[in-house]
Image (cartoon, rainbow, N blue to C red):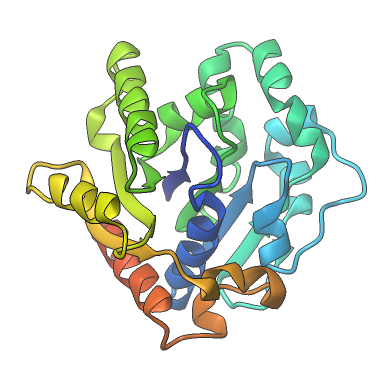
Length: 249
């Protein structure tokens, strides 16, 4: 089982749309996928037309086992399940801090899904928190959607700095450009600046496209309602790169 976290220090960069579209693409390839919506905003839960549970005990959830499995919702897409978010997830950091070995306390939750899923995709809230530290430690890859702009690049460099400071493997960290508008000179130049072979950026570029915004209206991944769109093709290419990088056969 592989664990892929979609993360950024800042919000509004396409984390959730990336999580949903990659989860759908992986499921379409026949992998059993669990999308863990760890953001209390519950946007990924909404996009997949799932519902948050009426109540949530985050302490019991972190223990994994039967309680965690009971929270899982099937989606309309074969091979794709979701662990829906809940407003109580705002307390996850506090609950993790109460656990022994708090930097890896999330491992019990993920271990409980081993044998049931080929891939876990975690949609992480923004910011560097104890939750994100857990994800950095436990994930096989941390994928960072990055707008091709100065501020967004600066945020990615801060994440790189955190990985270096905490002696986390830089091989885990990947980035790609999202919400890219090639009509903007800054976007074109930034993409060009990071196009070398030794760049941490994947070659996939997700465009700024209205069809991605329409996910909220359709409550489905882009490929499920606009399969031939450039955005759908871009997500397919991104999944192809991520799949190869994770060595998923």
